[in-house]
Image (cartoon, rainbow, N blue to C red; front, side, top):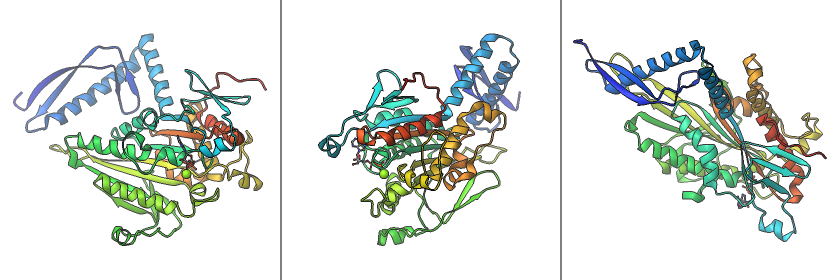
Length: 422
Ligand code: ADP
Ligand code: MG
């Protein structure tokens, strides 16, 4: 017509995401017909057409009686649910100190399977990184890269490093370094900036990095890099279900260097007196939150849509102080002793992993601890979560290692394939 031009594009599709589910179908080619309004950006028109297509595909899947399509749907549902919560285990190598003390390696990794054995126990996970000290690149590629990618598709995400003090949580998360030897956090930073650089509408992104430390101006920190004072954290829930923090230092950065500076500042404040098991770093959770604000291209007749997503990178408190907490009567059914927030976190993740219960409107106990309240909008729902349980292979740490593996395994709700009789 006078008012519109029609463009038809044939595109191969194997699966596509609609708002609520992943729809897979075996159509080799799908035609997208886009009507372009006069003066309208072609990309907006295509996006509209794709939206319409995904709606019709969803309808097709729902109304189709062919078992093929139905089983495809079931299959993609399972895929999706297992993608939302993943649990990996990272076994660090024996340290020189441990070798000198005559410690031995007490963990066996089952070849070709994500399974670990220790004593009479066997545990299955999504991924297991062996005691040879897997390169951090592998952990990043398997566990974290999909979460970073998900960020740019509008999902919130959380990476949790769990384990006793000395098990390699901070080493794995890493706060410095570059290239393949760097830890998870620098790798996340690098790939976020790479991703933004490769996008055409670069100026549409606004990155914010939040560190949980008290409010201090950047200039003051630069002039005198002091450890920020500690203030109680206030957590407030926004009307839309999002979480807002008071008493937190928030920095808006636009460069990688700016982000590194903020990270350094965070780790500095955490490193105070970290010489023994009761150090700050083993008693506190370090949470590094990256907020990505993405402004969709505005087009005629519509304002720019702003999407705001969060990625939490969490180096959890050491789990061993559990022993003290257990004296106060905190106890898990399975006999693991952990502190309150870690107990709450385990309960939340385990509730999220229980598809059946969730469907029946099952309760997710977010409100049981500050940690879970804080992560609430990035755990569960449409968010992606990965927990990496870090363990020491030393026989002297066997008891804690079993506790950690039991906790992580419970969080994942994975049926263990092999149970060795005691
Ligand atoms: P956590 O943060 O869990 O208390 P750390 O990350 O501080 O533990 O690690 C404890 C010690 O183990 C450190 O000296 C660290 O350098 C070493 N370490 C941890 N993981 C590895 C690894 N994959 N390869 C070599 N050394 C490691
Ligand atoms: Mg640490």
